[in-house]
Each structure stands twice: as C-alpha cells, then as structure tokens.
Amino acid sequence: MDKFVKALEEKGIKESIMKVLEKNPDADIAEILEYEISKDENLEDIFLEEAHECAVNAVCGEIFHEFIAEKIFNPEKVNALGEALAKASEQIVDAFSSAFSGLFNDKN
Image (cartoon, helix red, strand yellow):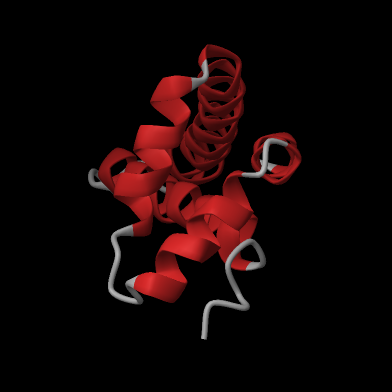
C-alpha cells in the first residue's frame, strides 16, 4: 500500500483530509477517502492494484500454510480452510492498517 499512500500525499489529499479533521474531528476518514479516490481514476487504479496484491498474497500464503500443510500433515483437521481464510482476512486488515497508520497519525 506504500504506492497508494505516496500517491495520496503527492496529490495533496492528506492535507485536504487533515483540514476537514481540524474542522470536524469526528469526520469519517474512510468516507472522505472513498470520495477522493472516486474523483481520480489513476488513484483508484493504484488502490485497487495494491489492494488486490495484498489480498492475493495474504490468502495464498495462509491457504498454503494453514490449509495445504494441515491437509498433508494433519488430515483429520477439517476446519483448516476456514481458519486459513480467517487468518488471511486478519492479515489483509493488518496490511491496510499498517499502510495507513502513519498517514494520519498527527490527527490528534
């Protein structure tokens, strides 16, 4: 998500959102980001590309580690795929959180 965060900063979107937050600290950052992304097709493409890559990496990694490995070495474990997908979902959320954590850390 580094490329996307960099694009947000280069396009002045971070500063724009910070101004909104100064006026309204309870503003919904996700809603503002969605609006800003929808105005710029290139930014939307960057976001979708990086989000897709993040999701694929997390899902494939977890399916391999949790599902395939469990099926080979612990075949009686029937819930392995569900657990793998749950862990992948957590990794995706963590990746997005990490990518954006520094972007608005000066909010308060």
